[in-house]
Image 1: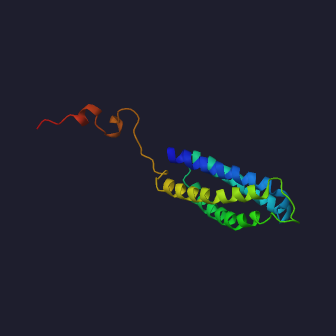
Image 2 (image 1 turned 45 degrees about the horizontal axis):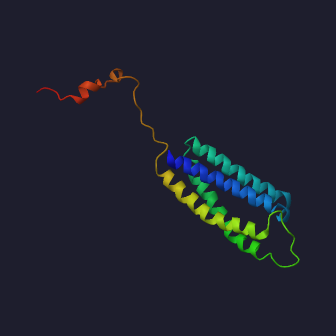
Image 3 (image 1 turned 180 degrees about the horizontal axis):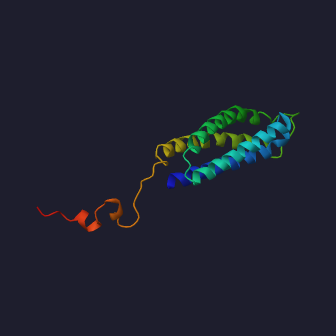
Length: 154
């Protein structure tokens, strides 16, 4: 239960941070509206993954880990360029360039934590269910509870 909540929280924090970075640097985003659409789809996918995790869907865990690996790579490649934009002649974004760079640097350890927690949660076998009969179980061939606990006379 705790792993499920932590995983959903991490996915929602990632979605929020991605949204903040995307909106903050939207005016400078290369690739036009298509790239902006892709960034917003990425945010939506993380929200969907969080909802799937809250519904105990184990299949969302490896997929979210894979997306986190991609996001980690993008953040690691993009962060240094935001810090080198402090020279004259560069356009300004909605958020300060160093803030966007700092958010991207924070994204890297966050994605490592998402990957680790996803793999821990995946190993918890969320898909396994234990069947238990309703009532005392006598209808299914089980002994009544007091006969199971008391030793049988020889």
